[in-house]
Image 1 (cartoon, rainbow, N blue to C red):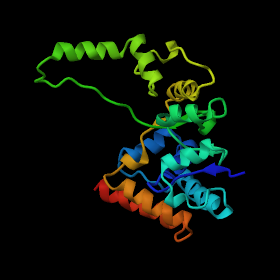
Image 2: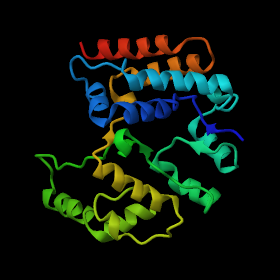
Image 3: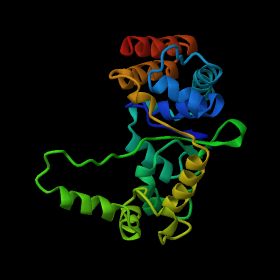
Image 4: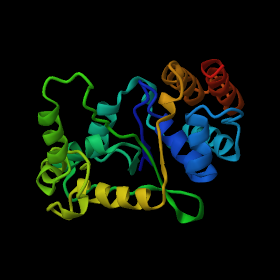
Length: 237
């Protein structure tokens, strides 16, 4: 059996790396690096463990052949076809997984330090411009977004609700149902960390190119971490 399904054409191995960093170092420390806090570094116990783990998994054949040439949708398709025991993915693919492998796929948040749940993600922000032509209408929409009715609509279309996630009605076997439970745990433990790719304007490109080289055995864990930290330093000068 293939242990871990992965499509790394756009650098989605960063989900694996960040999950390990978040879990080992804790959400607060990792957030300092993502958010550009002075003196922060990816050369931490978590960073070292994550880079070594990704290289080790690739060397041992725990990742699929051709992962660097497969995109995320392709890896999801392979996963639902039964190729791979685990897939590091986000809630945006929950509905797709349910349709293709209902009852055969589950979701768990990554366990963090002291058994605290961690998760990678961010939120969607809504605002009313100061010069909006219809501010009252916009305000009414924002009010609606915070109702149980809107929560059900958001949940049914594959998104975590703005509020009232505990009131939605759903099949308990659905992946989204487990995503909601996972989010509750992450929220309770204050374990949400923004995506590594958002730490600088160029970090996504660096994560992609460097992880592809690491998986291909063309670079090592130390060089991988050096490249990430160098990008971070340039982005926060």
